[in-house]
Length: 445
Ligand SMILES: Cc1ncc(COP(=O)(O)O)c(C=O)c1O
Image 1 (cartoon, rainbow, N blue to C red):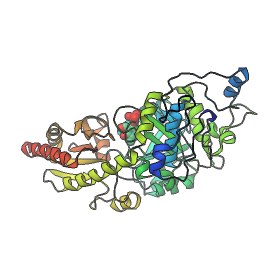
Image 2: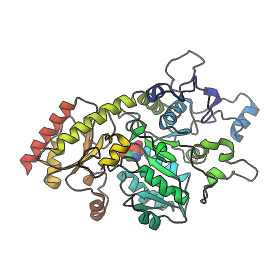
Image 3: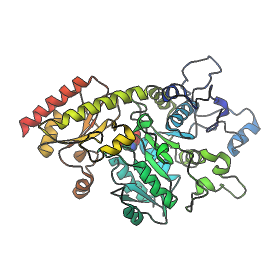
C-alpha cells in the first residue's frame, strides 16, 4: 500500500493504485467503518477530535502523529473525497476547500507572497481574473497575462525573477480555447516554475494535467466533480513531481522548516509536501475548509464522473455541430469542431471531445443574445457550469460585466456571445429548446 497523505485513523481498505479510472472513482479513499460496518463512508460531523491522552495531543500538534486535530485542518469525510480526487488526477495528495476560488487562492498563496508575481494565460474564468486583479493585488501578489501561450518571446517578456507560478486552465471557461499544457510545461521547466492548472472544465475524466507536465491541479468541485449543482466546493491536488528544492526560486512554505531545527514539509512529507503546506500553512490559517456535508456530496458525485462526462461531451459535440449550421448563429467556439483553429490540439489531447462548456455567438449582438436567452426553457438562465442541468449565460452582462470594453474585446467576449453548459438531459430536447430560442433571434433580427 502506498500511503499518499497518511491518516492512520482511516487507512483505506485497499490500495486502489493500478485499478481502472471507473473503479477508482467508486472506491478510492473509502475506509473501514469500525463501528457499524457502513458501506458508504459516513458524514463525520465533528468540529474536533478526542486525543487518547496527554502525549497523543502533543504528538498531533508537533506533527509526530498525523491524526486529526480540528476540522479546519482535516476531516475523515473530506479525506475520502481528497484521496479519491488525488487518485483520479494521478496526484500524491489533495486538499478539499470551500470553493473553487478558495482552491485557486490556497494553491497560489502556498507559492507566492507579497512582492511575488504569477503569470497566467489570458483566457481564464472571469471570476479568477477578478480575484487576481483585486484581492491578489491588494495582498501584493501581481498577476500578468500571456495572450499567446505558444509565443516563447511573450513568456520571456512576462516572467520575472519574482515569478512563482504559471497558472492556466485546461479547457478555458467560456471560450473552450484549449491550452497546450505540454508546451506550457516546457516553458515552465526552463524557468524552474510550477504549473498550476484549473481542471474544472476538463475534469480528470477527460484530461489529467499531470500527464502533460503540470505540477498542481485546482478544481471548482462545485461543477462536474460534485456534479449535481447542489454544493459549492474546491480542491487543490499535488502532482508530487515538482522539484521544490532544485528550483532556483524559493518556496519557503515547502522547503523551509517553521523554526530552525524543525523539519520542513519537504523533509516530512516528500512528494506530498506541497499539499501539506496548502493544508497546514494556508487553509488552516485562513480557514476555507470544506464542510463534511459538501465533501460527502463530492465523494458521491465523483462515483459517476466518467459516465456523466461521456454524456456531457457526446451531447456537446452533437449540439455544437448542429448550432454551427443554423442561420441565426455567427460562430461556435468548440475546439472539437473541425472548423476550430484548435481542432488538432483538441484531437491530440481530448480525442476531439473538448468538454461541455463553450460559446455560441448569435446574430444581432446584445438584442440577439437577449432574444436567445429569453427563449430558452430547458436550459436554465443562470451562472454556473458542469451541472446535470443545461445552463446558459450572457458573459458580457454577467461574468465579464465589470471589465473595460477593450479588455472584453481582446478576450473575445462580444455582445452576441452566450456561454452554454450542456447537461445530461435528452439531447433532442436540448436541440429543440435551442431551436425555439433561435426562432426568437430570427424574429428579433
Ligand atoms: C474554471 C473555473 N474555475 C474556478 C471557478 C470558481 O469556482 P467556485 O464558484 O466554486 O468558487 C469557476 C466558477 O465558475 C470556474 O468556472
